[in-house]
Length: 361
Image (cartoon, rainbow, N blue to C red; front, side, top):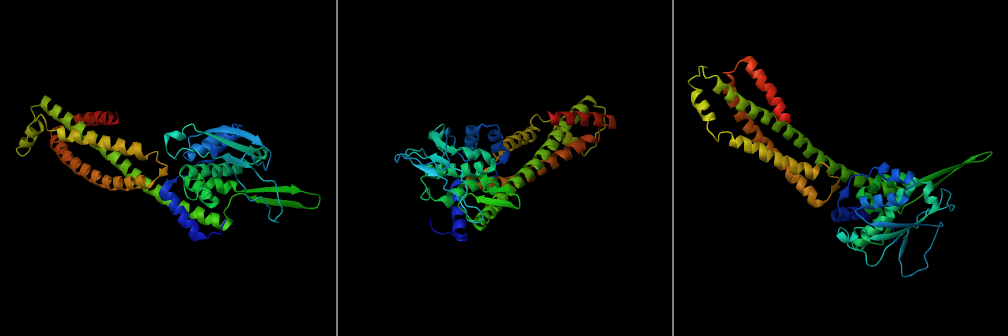
């Protein structure tokens, strides 16, 4: 495998994100909970799902450093670095994933329940975090092969694929195993590093991916903040429209009120059958837009280029929607102010209480 530099890593990250998008960090606990319950198959399938692989895992255990003799079945062995700080060989963790030549394309229904054979060594169970990191790497080979990617056998690309698909933190935590042995006169510590990137390379990639991820998350947060503001605007608008209707009803029941000359034409207009239709239509269209954005982005954790473009589009659209709703609210507030001149304190308080209950419904 040829030597790589930061430019190579940076270009690979950009290429992979353009192809696959980038996911938010996968919570390590989500992976480790089934592992610690000794549900190893479920653990591996959870990792696979997080990578976008809805496959079925056929799991078996083998001795460490197992090698297949069947040339017709290709196994990707981790072949990970298994030396301590002094360069001595130490026991490695073996994880092998079969990659059939007839693997369905990534993102297609053919991958649903597609059987994949995974062989792991018994010592995997000693290091939960490292096991998760190794399996994320091995299953990322499946991702690249199912994409028929030109670098599908490139171990650096495979590490980077796992990282952009949400396993940066998992791999950071699991890539090193430290063991301490106490002797009579000294304590000896050995560190085993798993993965194909050196520490400097790994943290260069880690930081670049984290920055891209943070930028995307902030874009989502910005939109959701506007969504919250818009929802509050709509809540106030609904209350105001309800108050308007109730004030008209109150005035109709108390026709002995002396109406000012300048308010007469307005109050007549308020009684037109279709006067509130436009106000009601605003509520309906706003609620539909709120639901659309909420459904698309509240649970968003995978940022593809298409979704990011959509996020930016909705972000600009929200500015227009909030401005339009503000204009409609100002018109409605003016109408309510006209009617409010002819309702006493007790009547207003009762209507306000009713409007609060209505807006929450």
